[in-house]
Amino acid sequence: MDNEELINRYLPLVKRYWLPLILGFAGLILLGYGLIGLFASSSDSKDIIFERGDSSQNASQSAMIVVDVEGAVISPGVYNLPGNSRVKDALIASGGISAGADKLWISKNLNLALKISDGAKIYIPFEGEKQGNTQGSTSLGGSSTVGGGGLININSASEKELDALPGVGAVTAQKIIDNRPYQALEELVSKKAVGSSVFEKIKDKITLY
Image (cartoon, rainbow, N blue to C red; front, side, top):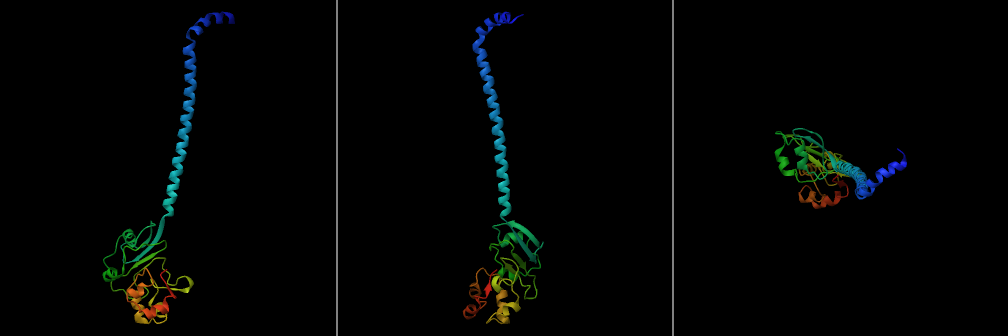
């Protein structure tokens, strides 16, 4: 069968059904474009979800702080806590205060609502524990007894280190220790650990951190 016979045979069919054929081809083309657009959209959506998840994880990690909880707690150790944590949260993480803790010191000095920063150390004294450099405290910026510029950290310094401050003797040094922790230097006066005259002598030599 030659080309002329094929044309003569199928030309009437083409003339009769030309509109359905054209619509069919057009539908196939549109379907192809639709599938391509669908796959492209799906691929872009997955990329966005992955990036958001990764960003959220990094933000969560950067907000964490590390706190050292020691002394009369059930599980002493170093804990990772959210950045807005307070002393109460650190004690909960360590299992709570043990039965042997100095309850009187806790009721007088421990501020459960105090915010803690990265690198802080919280020490809960045992009942009957000897007073001095082992006295319970909340050191907001770490456990160092000497701050920047050689300043004495009133939240963690020993009795001997406090005694070396001008106008501070052994008795006053012990008062400073007994009234820990301090959130402001002026609390030395408001808590009656030192008098105003002594505070004026030592305020430039002490720090909270």
